[in-house]
Amino acid sequence: MNIESFSELLVAAQPIVLSFVSRLAIAIIIFFVGRVIARFAKRVVKKIMTRARIDPTLTVFATNILFYAIMSFVVLAVLGQVGIETTSLVAAIGAAGLAIGLALQGSLTNFAAGIIIIIFRPFQVGDWVEADGYSGYILEIELLMTTLKTLDNRTVVIPNGKLTEGDLVNYSTQGTLRLDLVIGVDYSTDIDRVKAIFMDVMTANSRVLEHPTPTVGLLEMADSSLNFAVRPWVKPKDYLPLSLSLQEEIKKRLDQEGINIPFPQRDIHMISAN
Image 1 (tube, rainbow, N blue to C red):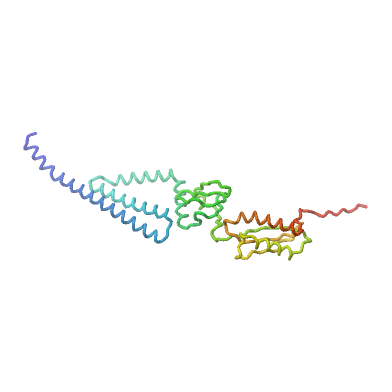
Image 2 (image 1 turned 30 degrees about the vertical axis):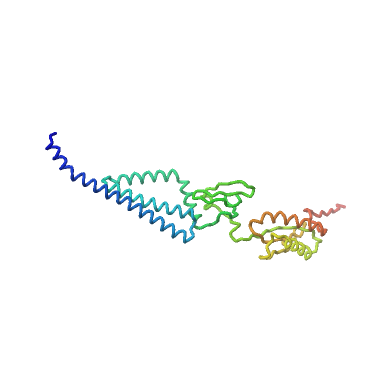
């Protein structure tokens, strides 16, 4: 190739090179401006969600999703600016996303359930709940699973999908619980005296709340005993300790007062055939 031909080639290629350089420069500008916009949007949304006192876990997740969504559009714009066909790329990404979604269907269900739990807050960390056959205190709430510490100190990890699909009992929501005890005494016992004893035992226990007021009443006249409903109110954290201590205190007090807790019994009448 002689010098004249090479010069002609350079002259012919110059517009193409200048066009590519200009497109590349614009693509770089688009990328950096888009990243600035994505970061700005992330900060704004984070401030709004923080002021609205939305759960920090959901705030971090939502702001990150927003940032990467904006950056995805920015990257597509950059690729289109430098002349790369993005239609087939978007289709390939969509197909890959569909395949991943089908493979992770169970995880996505738990993920959606985690968002529902964080938004609607059926329970919080520290609450005493009963769910999926377990009873215990909430240790940690994540997007895919919730960690529970049972009353016998076992750690149980429950997928969030099970928590939203099944029944869930939260013992901590109202701040107080009523302990329901049924105590039977002999039929010969004076009812008013027994009620006074039960009430005295409850008021002497520091775990029993003054408000709501504890109650005592004759629940039923059973086959072998008069059954009394003993119902004190207690804070959720004191429920089990009170259940154990109060029954023990009542038994000791009834023994001191000479009141019997009868065994099941039947009166049998023998009729002579003569």
